[in-house]
Image 1 (cartoon, rainbow, N blue to C red):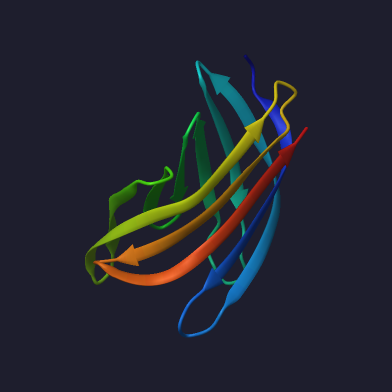
Image 2 (image 1 turned 90 degrees about the vertical axis):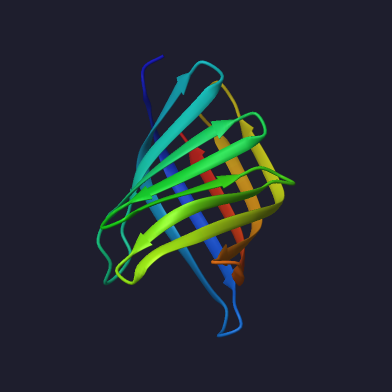
Length: 139
C-alpha cells in the first residue's frame, strides 16, 4: 500500500512534582501499512527546540514511538509491560522506562485513527512524570 497523507494532532499532558504542563502539535504526516503494522511519520516543531522526526509503529497491542533530533529516543508502550530503553545524553547514558496503564488504539482502512496512552516515565529507576498522550490522524 502506498503512503497516505494525513493530518496529525498530538496532545500531551505531563504531571510532575515541579509542575504540570501540556502542549499540542499539529502537523502533516504519512501513514503506511506494512503487513499487520501501521507506520505514521511526521515532524514536530516546538519553540526553541530543533525539529524532531517522529516515527510511530502501531501494532495490535503495542505502540512504539521513535523521536529523532540531536538524539534518538525510542519508547515502547504495551499495557502491563514495563519497557526499558537506553537514552544517550550529554551527561551520559540514562535508562528510560515506560509503565503503560492505558493503551487504546483504533485505525481504519481509510487512514483515520487514534492512539490514547497513559503511562509513567522513569529515568534510572526514578519516576519523572505521569503522561497522558492522544494522537489523532485523519486523511
